[in-house]
Image 1 (cartoon, one colour):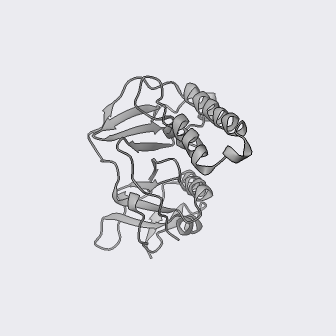
Image 2: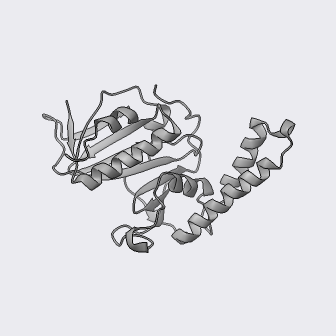
Length: 231
């Protein structure tokens, strides 16, 4: 049994909240875990957004499992969530599963360059709210016979593929960040904690929206047919 010792109860609670949100969108969700030293990265893909969500957590002590000093495994998000003990700040790594296709297509670890033009957090949240409202309005105006899945998908693609501000980042990335709790205001009403301000970065074919609570990565060439989930 491999146990992850998180830095504190807060790290355990934040990780649990992230996993719960992923499962809300896909009860069979899988996550890929990578741990090295005192850092843990958790990758997931909420359905329909065509993005990767990344949540990092601090470990209370460097990861090790026998002679292995790093971890890289794909597991059930639900089983990982069930294993988290927030009061003890621990999580048991479940048995590995056959990962969905996206798990083999992660963004690079380095080479990220800042990208200009990203709107402020309040503006991002307002853009997402306006896009959701527009989608609801346009779909409600459709006649019953015209409210087909193909037409709903077409409207959704049109809205969520728009770019944010002067960037190449699609609105769906901000929508995913909002849905996963990454765009929430920081405690005390400030926009972001000082240690991790909102930012946009690029590396090769990837764009990454970094927030204080996690990141959303978008591959400009698309993630392909990544609708397979682990059951």
